[in-house]
Amino acid sequence: MDLAKAATPVEEVAQRAREADAPRNFFQAVTANRPPRTVSVIAEIKRKSPSAGWLREEYRDEDFDPAPIAKAYHRAGAAAISCLTDREGFAGDLDYIRRIRNRVPLPVMRKDFIIDAWQVYEARAASADAVLLIADILTEGQFVDLLILATELKMTTVVEVHDVESLLRVRHHIGFPHPGYTLLGINNRDLRTMQTDLNHTLRLLDMVEDKRILISESGIRTHADVERLRKAGVGIVLVGEHLMRQEDPGAALAELLGD
Image 1: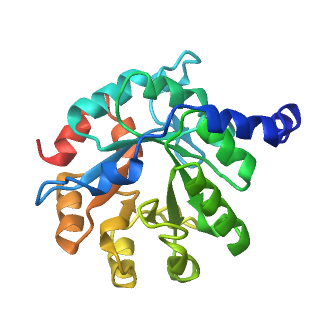
Image 2: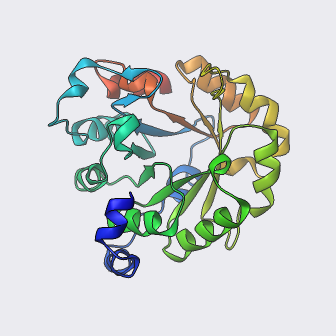
Image 3: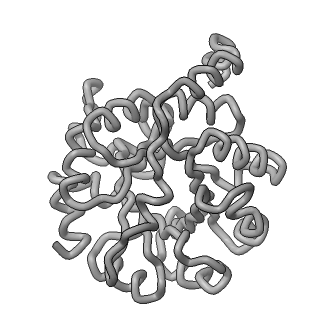
């Protein structure tokens, strides 16, 4: 990131961001017009992870194209797409966002370790409709500044928390500076052990005032998992690794939704 920032001043990337096509409404895509007894799925495109390595052998191909997977997700009923853009740990690429958006009408979130304004501008310039902010890697001041900037660019922000402490620290900022731009994600993965447990979302559920904006992330593998969360009041899930491990991620998503 430092090399990219040195090569392109923030003023230039900010101008590109403001000249980009208008963002698609990620917030509305996952919260509005959801039929009763259903859950919105944010389907993720991820080639590898630091803990799991390459999710499938064919993802090692340098010519990997995320667009066919995004199209399969769209056909299977995904409400939105999440795309890893971190290169080192996840073999991601910022250009994947443009390639996905050119092929499917769904809004796309840039999932990365975003810590400063330059990256938010970079995301919007690359046509991202939403960005992930991980509460545990940001100070409160950084978090609020990035939240405001993303809203000014009319992007949705998914604020990710992992535990009670990070949830308490950020929950009063959810919906700031304007409601309708911020979603709250609870990551079910214990970052110390890398184990996942759906009970993590269920334990924190009562601490979330507006459950309409809540996303349960990680460890969701079956239709029964989705139903368990739905019955508890969770209306949005983010699923990536399970789908990307399958030979046909679109068919795996349809099965997850019970279709």
